[in-house]
Amino acid sequence: MFSTWKQKSNNKKIAQALSVFLIAGVLFAFGGQVLVVGQTADELQRQKAEKQRALDAIEAKISSFKSQIKAQQGQANTLKNQISIVNLQIAQTEAEIEATEGMVDAANLEIADVTEKIVQTQNDIKKQKNILRNLIFQINDLDQRSPLEIALENDNFSQFLDQVQYTTSIQVQSQEALVKIKQLTADLEQRQSALKTEKANLDALLTQLDLTIAGLTGQQAAKQDLLDETRGQEKAYQKLLAEQQNLEKALNEEIYNLDSQISAKLGNNKLKPIHGLLAYPMKGTLTQGYGNTGFTSLGYNFHNGLDIASKANTPIYAAGDGTVVGVGTGEGAYGNWVAIKHHTGKFSGHPIISLYAHMSSFVLKNGQEVVMGDLVGFEGNTGNTTRLLYGPHRGYHIHFTIFDANGFGIAKGTYEKVYGPYMVPYGATYNPLDFL
Image (cartoon, rainbow, N blue to C red; front, side, top):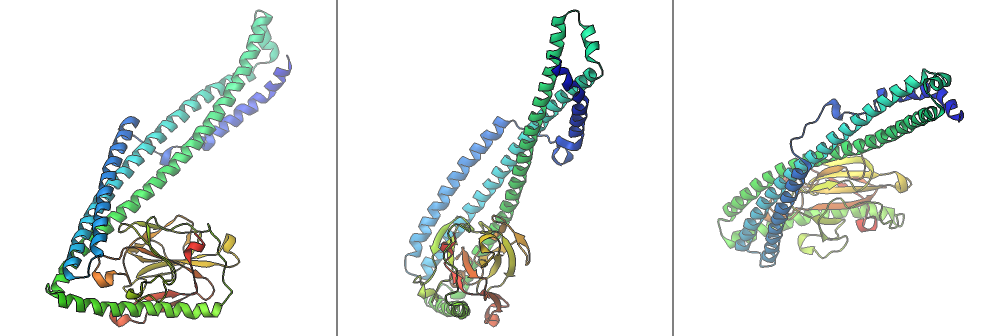
């Protein structure tokens, strides 16, 4: 029985430790501010469900436009058909703007939902803090009295046992409150992290929206330019098409020749396939694979990467951890591009480099450290894409290449008189599917 009272000598230390624990900041406040959310959780869930239904309807409309465009592209390449495709592309972009605006609204609702949960968790922590504080006071009070004093305060032995049980109960409750605070604190940290992620998603969506709106303006201008250059005449359109095909072929040969020289030097000293090391940089449709893909009409002797297409300005993410070793802009070759060197983990003995090309814009800079999933930029059609043949409304995709780090380099573009200044990353390439 008196073994219980031996524990009393530690009560004061426990109480002091718990007090320090509280003061040290177990109880966070989000940004040091009290967040106020006007909508109930049920109302937020209802609005999120409504927004998702609206987004599903818009996505169905976009899919319909894509099917119509594909059917139109399968017909003869005439000026009339090209104008029809432009009109469909403009309508698709308008629907994509509507969809992105809907996703922005959905992101705002998600932020409000997470914020509401953060406020509730903070309130729960506050309640547990008050419970623990009261228990600490009671422990301190008991600690001031000796077992003999407590025994004399009770009329009989039964009351004394009740007092002992009460003291034990306080200790148990204190421990339970402490565990609850730790659990709530962990929940709060997770929700604050989720809020940070949602805000980053919102920023990406807003940038995507701005780029898509700008792309719509470009599509509308391209339609007018095409009409102005050909004056509505089929013969003029075919001449314009032939001239651009020759220029595009020259750009592709430039890339092929640079890569081939390095591949020849490396010979058999290349990596074997290691599947699962990298992640896909973007969600979309694989429109062209690696190697001799048969796109000779576009000047391809050899396609040195994967082409993945999605709606214009879709976010692109780093395929793995690494360091940015090159960035470039321009209208020739790869357009706006970023190269990331992967040199840690399984790549530490033989690093590789991933290339993200044809982007409308990018957010990384040379020398920057990145981790898998970091935002690289947004899908575009800059550089040598079918944009050169048909105008800025065409060619949206990411070109994803994997280079061996040995022999990798960046060369000055050959055709600056035609396209202005641009740089060309080059090296011995791998099939990206061998690492995805």
